[in-house]
Amino acid sequence: MPFIQGKTLANALILWDEKYAHKPTFALQHYLRELCSDLEIAHMRSRMLQALVSTVSSAQDDHRASGQPNRQHNAPAAAKLHSAPILLMFMALVEGLIEAPGSDASTRIRLYVLENLAKVPLSSTERWGFHAWLNQVSPLTGTTPNIHTMQQVINLAYVALCEYLGPIKADQILQNTVSKVQQAYPSTQVSSLL
Amino acid sequence: MRVGSLAVSVCAILCSAIVGSANSAAAEPNILEVSQSLNSSWVVITGVLVFLMQAGFALVESGMARAKNAVNVIMKNYMDVCVCSVIFWALGYGLMFGANSSGWFGASHFLPSTLAGWDWTFLFFQMMFAATATTIASGAMAERIHFHAYLIGACVIAGLIYPVFGSWAWGGTHGGSGWLKDLGFIDFAGSTVVHSIGGWAALAGIIVLGPRLGRFSASGESRTIPGHNLSMVALGGFILWFGWFGFNAGSTLAANLDIGKITLNTHLAACAGALGYMLTTKAFKQPVLLSGTVNGSLGGLVGITAGCATMDPHYALLTGLIAGIITYVAPKFIASFKIDDVVDAVSVHGFCGAWGTLAAGIFFAGDLFNLARISIQGLGVLVAFAWGFGVALICYFLIDKIIGMRASSLHEQRGLDFTEHAEIGYPEFQDTRALNTEALQSQR
Image (cartoon, rainbow over all chains, first blue to last red; front, side, top):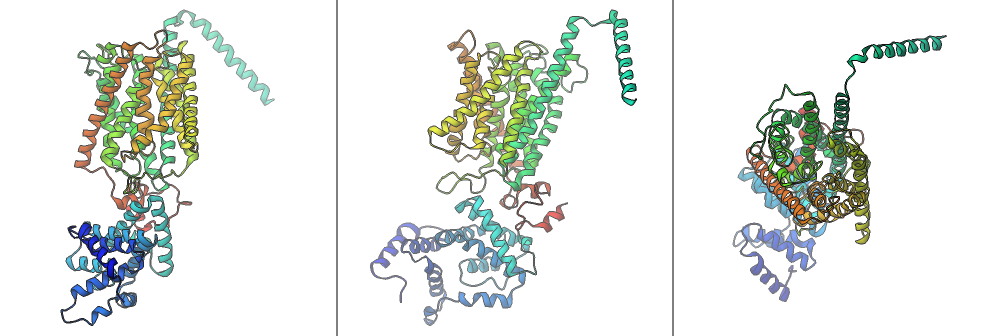
């Protein structure tokens, strides 16, 4: 079952050509956000992005992967097996901050964090890992960012919340998300990430 | 028994005082000395009232900020009176009131240590004015400026911007005269000299700083960020109002019969300012906010400061009323440029100060609507803006480039109480779930 087809697909290509093809960075993500928002299929954005990335990155003759683009459902489990508690807590906190507003606002916040990740000093491996994680392609494994980096990424999510929802709402979401994550990880202080 | 012996003792003291007084009749001070003593006492007391206004500013500004920045706001108010007083004594007083042969700045009485008796009184009173002009900027720039950067800016206002403009409008106490003063510019207690200058400096500061995180949405929509304690705002408003009686009535520099009318005008304008704000909100079918009402009365006070000695009470009322309307309209005008003024200091002090200075010319008792006088007042208003805003803009721009003014977004997230002072305003009541207590402790 394709995500979109027929005339809708043609309109989707026009949207890409007119508004996004010439943009330097994160055009694909913005394009998918707007497309999914217009077609009221916001819940599919992540899967569409993964399918696109998977298609582009797979070997030319490897079409088997195209039918199973979504590895994310296994991601938390995989991450739990391989990551330190502080990293899991960090991921839960950032995801919590991004997902708290819901629907289109969450996607905007996710894109804001992605776009501004360039301001955070990261090695190329870390940067790739963060991009893949924030694009919901794969969990943040194989890299252990230091606490300062984690604080900066959380702050990016906070700034995005301020920009899109206002500072009062941002503070409320931050407090509530910290509470939820703290309940999930009672052995470590979540506030050490702030 | 004990009460009886106390009564005897009091009588003995009183009798000896009377006898002593009679014996020293030959050395009795003359009427001039008595008058000077009274004047000095009056001006020192009113100077103390002006000092109390710092507490009012601290309460208003802190109450209008979020809880996580409450300590920082108060610290700025507390320290700028300390820093500014020293700077004004060392440099500002000489620039403002020293021998002013050119008309542009004073050039004597720096670091004063040997002054005549009255001059000490005058220096103390003017020092409080300098602190008032300086502290106006603190509220506007709240919640996002580094503490040390703010204090450096405060030094420039107290040591250069305020006294130089003051020398033009009020200068010449120790010889010469200011050029604006010579033109006939009227600013009795400082609508422009103190308040507009402070307001324009604040405007420059908030332009360089930029708005707080999320204050304006991407589409330009203005978002309200409510203060954490409206009771503090109201108490601060009352204290400022109280101190303003000293600010205006003390500017007579003499305990004479003028102070009654000046005080009455001051009070009427404050009342009318709050009323003006309230009526405007009603006209626009908006709720009457406490913070807006307090600012309305403060706008009325700022407005009447220039003409409180030269206006009849009904014009004082009108001046305050219009100032109250300005405190409703001007913040919206400023916000339309995406300029974030936390306490609406630019509107209350800058715009209402400019209006009050014009009003002092328009409603001059016995010579109403004199265009020549109004023109001079207008010139003073424009020159104050050009000087106060221009120099402050350069100053804040340089501070920003050299040491950085804007707190980082992480600091804004944590709150400046934590990042600048390592303490929080309400440890028992504040929501500390998102507070990194380890980092807080490690700063101490």
